[in-house]
Length: 122
Image (cartoon, rainbow, N blue to C red; front, side, top):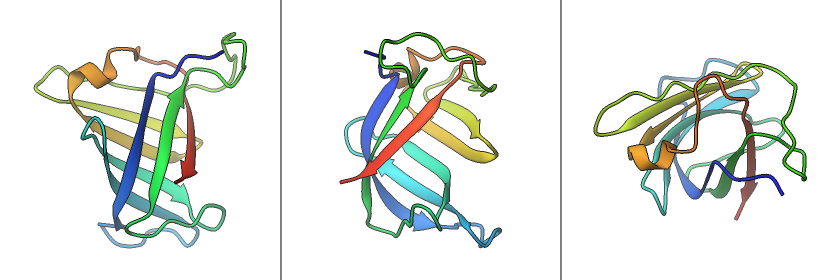
């Protein structure tokens, strides 16, 4: 079984805080329940509609292979910063994510690590 690098339940607080930039993509702002992480995430809303107040589980994993073998796919960059909080940035085919919060939440991440973002509404 593949290990989870991060898992939490988020609540959408705002959509498109800087205004709508693309027809079929919205940038959501969300706050997590367990680790009190702040996230901005670009979501293809024509495929996966999101609204303020929606709750979803979000998991970051290094591979989609159930046996945990590494993926040989595309490059994704995560940049942890040393501070009282950590900011991690990743791009998923051009859809961007920024995750900010307690540095202990980023202990399992590595620079230039491949990531897959899995989410499901709860």
